[in-house]
Structure formats: structure tokens, C-alpha cells
Length: 339
Image (cartoon, rainbow, N blue to C red; front, top):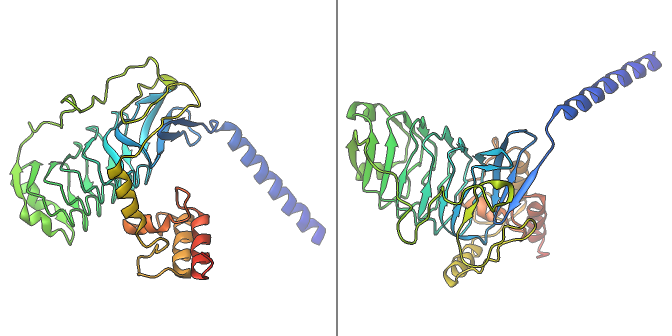
């Protein structure tokens, strides 16, 4: 009887192994592209790429390529630009359809961002704590403004919202103390139908303008600005129309990187950020084992156990960019008084 059970178990295991092997063989090969300061991953697909990370020491104006080696860049991953303190402008290509949670959060010097007109979703906290951002035009077709989207954007003065928006979630505009104008590309009746979560008191302080469909997107051809579509296909690794500005030198040769020299202002900003309570992932004012648990839960399931705003910054505490198990270990050592 036991031998029969063992044979049946072995057969099931073998069938599963064959199934996995076949599935793996049918998948596209994993490909990682790196062109300083950006990193892209194809996540085993044949035709698309996701922008997964921008180096924290990047600075100046950055344009994301539309294609690399015939693969379209279609998404910005959660936290891709998180805490890029010295990036002042970003241009996303028309191929982008989704922007992940906290993608540009804590980009304190970000003043301009070009968002394509057909983005399908911008996840929560995407622009939180972008305290230099003054205006934003949300893309046509966007269904809703997710929670904490502009949380802590203290310089934000004007936002253009398409008529397709039907909801504004909790704290989307909390802390936007300079918000003076909302341009809604619909009717007053449509605006009244929008479901607004609380708190969003700052919306009550703004003047609402309606049916302003002629509102122009931000201009990037001004002196000192940038053109997101210049550059073309020639001279760039992968032929992706790469165009990047910033101090220091860059190279288009594979394997070489840009040499960024942070400005004094950037260094001061980074020093101020370092003063945040490192390790306090749950933002309760102390660093203990519960913070290590918070980090491990986040690593295991980001959707079920998300980290918001300052929790992101506090959790990344081991000196290596990115929230990993190393951060949980550091927190435990700190709690034990070993560091």
C-alpha cells in the first residue's frame, strides 16, 4: 500500500516537473537592460519592457526611451524613481500605459513631468512628496485619481483633470497647500458626480474651471528645458531614442556609465532624508521587531501589505538601495543594540 502511494506521489511530482519544464521552455528569455541611470526588465515577455529603477544619484532632466531592441517600454514599476532627490524633469514615451505605486515618490526636486495622453492607470502615491512639482496634466481616459497620488506636493498650484475621471480617492491632494486651480475637462454636472474620498480639503480651496479642453500641455522646448522626442534611433544602445541630460559625462557604449556629481543642494537634501528614522517601517516612532515584520510582509506581498510614503523611506535602511531581507536583518540588529 505504501509503495503504491509512493509511486503515485512520484508520478504526480514527475508530471508537475514536466509541466513546469514545458512552460519554462515556452517563455521568453529573461532580459535586463541597463543604461545609466535607468534599468529595464522584460519580465519574460517577447515584446515589452518595464522601467524598474532609476539610480538615486541621477540628476537633471531624464527622458525614457520608447523602445530598446524593438521592445516597447510600456510600464514604470512601483518605486522606480523613489527618492531620486536630484531629478528635475522626466519625459515618459507614448508607449507607457501604466505607472506603478510610489513610482516618483520623494523626488523632492522634480519640477516637470511629461505624462503620455493615454495612460491607463496611475497607482496610488505615484507623485507623493514631489514638493517642487507646480503643475500636472493628467492623461485623457484616466478613470480615477488614486489614494495619496499628490500627497505632500506642497508647491502644486494647478492640475488638469480629464472628464473621464469618476473618483478621487482618500488623501489624493492632502498637503497640497498651494493648490489654486483645477481645470476639469468636463461639465459642472460631471464634476459634481465625482466621488471624492476624505480628507481632500485642499480641493475646496481651488478654483474649478470647466470645459477647458484647449489647455496646453507643458512646453519642453523652452531654454533650459528638454524635448522628450529628440535624439532618434542612432547612437544609442539598443536604438531606443535615448536622451538624457544632467551634469557629469555620459557614454553610449555598452557597459559604461554616467558619472554623476551631486550638487550641494542635492547633498543637503540627501542628508536631510538620511535623518529620517531609519528602520521605522511602520512609522510608530520606534524601531523594533515589528518593523522587521512589516518589511518582511511587504517583501512577501506588496499588494496585501503595502508601505506608504515615509514608511518606504524608513524601511530601506541597510545602505543598499531597495527594500530587501537585508533591511529586516538590519532592523533586528538595531533592535538588539548591535548597530
